[in-house]
Image (cartoon, rainbow, N blue to C red; front, side):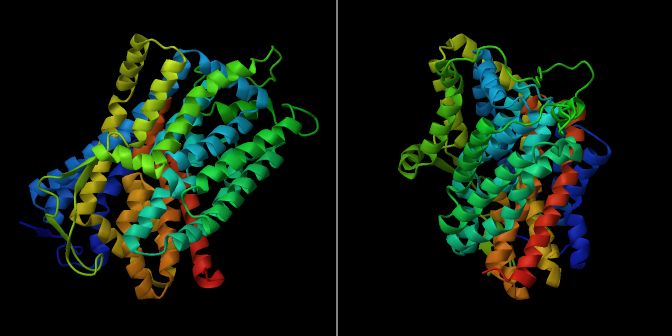
Length: 563
């Protein structure tokens, strides 16, 4: 027995159908942004609304609707929550063994300035992790590191979410672009170049934007040079690699170049001390930047603005402290190496999800002709990114001589920490899967496609909505990529540019997806109220950056004529 999707509801026009299809999104925005409910409550409430929408408006069979939601929840548990769990275990190993204090010291010796520490970790190092691993791990690891350096949980989460934008399009060894090419049948090389052209302007200004968004315009004082160097090197390398080498190594090479340039610069240049007459920023501004959202008397971390005067640790001690993250980098790169990945995938198995696989029929215009909607759940327990991170945690524990009992305590503590965030993650991804299978996402996509000459602008916003719903640029590309191509051809726009705009605009929605916020909250220990504040903060900046990306796409479509 099959069930065919329909995209216009109750015989009404597209506008009415779009408004109805958007009710899950409105529910999430209302509960988080207006009523300030905890993310897990918003997620479960949104799921209930989506089930009602699927069954009552789209006339989806109840069993099929429940199965689609269960499929999404399962994906939320594995591989998504598995990645977060593993990343936090790795970080806890460094803390439990005292090595993170040495990491803090080594970064503090490069610079005691929290703005530059944020550049190194939230912008450059997190960008590297995004390119190598992605899927939530970069935000979890980088935000935990910033907290260890004395940043407030709120400030650390805000910085890492804002920074997790431009690199996302090429995350996980280029998986979003590879997925987009596979979904649309377009050239991988041309899509990579087009996405690079769209996100590079954002990457160039992102360091400056980060500092202003968190610390205000006054926080720019005295650090223009490293901001320009970091953005220029990362953005320039991102453009060159995506254009001439392809998407796989774009983030990794760009981030390494940015980190190297910053480390080199900081050996010959230092930021002016707070309050220096020559233009040094005030101590209050620096503390506000690093401790945004912290309550009075809150001392989660000790923030030091002074240069180190005590004897520095030996090279051997510093190497030992950084070894867990060296293991992480090595494991992630090894897991991304195709021959090794094929061996790991030998024990991967696919589950044809019951009551869902090939039960739903996708209909034109999202596809050329009616076709079954597959529902395959991949259990790649060895080749998953979370497994590479857990292997790194185990190697780190062995290298640092952490006893099995202490490691078991870490596993238990992280499990407790992630209980409510996991509810949020699974419920939100269940919403996304259910909207996909009932046809609501296609209804939304058709609404965006009806914008005519402004379609390039709304093309980016469609990707933004897709990532907000799914938490993944890869998923948004798989969801809307073909719709972008079909709409572009109907409206006589370059399909490569429009498909690329879906990916480029999508990354600006990463910071507001409940999945990503749940990851940041779990890694930093944010309270329910702080999670709501974080969503309201990131929503503003997400809209600004998404609109900017849409304008860039519009510029390429009508004036610069990309390609």
